Length: 189
Ligand code: NDP
Ligand code: ZN
Image (tube, rainbow, N blue to C red):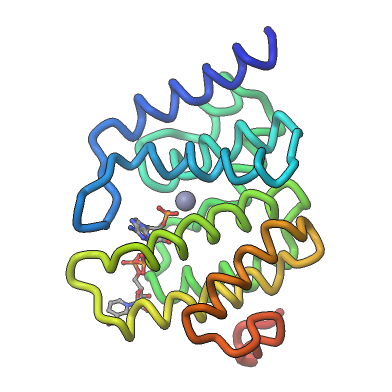
């Protein structure tokens, strides 16, 4: 299969899986804009690893749809499935705990998973900067920025371009020095 065929297959798979979902913004943007945007940030930042780009396109399918890792393995191979597994929250945990675990897991993730995480966080913080989701307060958005900075702290040294863009957004939104964000004791391993 050519690289182009592989990319279109992953894009199409994600589009089908996310077809009934919308983002949380007030406009209800189609969800698929997000994984495509994440993959686009990666290629714009110079990432050419096809497994990483496929994983970016597919990164929310297991967490947010009925898709299984087994299904991803069959269609896209072991490597892509394992990157998606690394960026998928454990089901069954309550939300606050999931967020704490993301901070811890980020620093132990593979380089490939860190790339997807960085681009995912960049997309989400830019989305939040663009528009406050329905029902969110400014405080909740600020909490999200702080949490994102903590996840990103475990992914640093992976892609400077993405990291610089993230720091710009976070600084613009009130974080004094995102690079020096301090983790709580229970956010470290
Ligand atoms: P989140 O706060 O995690 O929502 C953000 C997630 O939603 C993103 O990571 C992104 O994930 C997805 N998303 C969809 N649309 C958008 C968008 N337009 N902009 C940015 N992100 C978007 O929501 P949860 O409900 O999962 O989290 C609950 C947590 O929020 C609790 O742990 C609690 O700590 C906190 N909370 C705080 C409140 C407060 O008032 N301070 C109130 C309620 C909860 P993806 O990449 O997967 O699409
Ligand atoms: Zn995502």
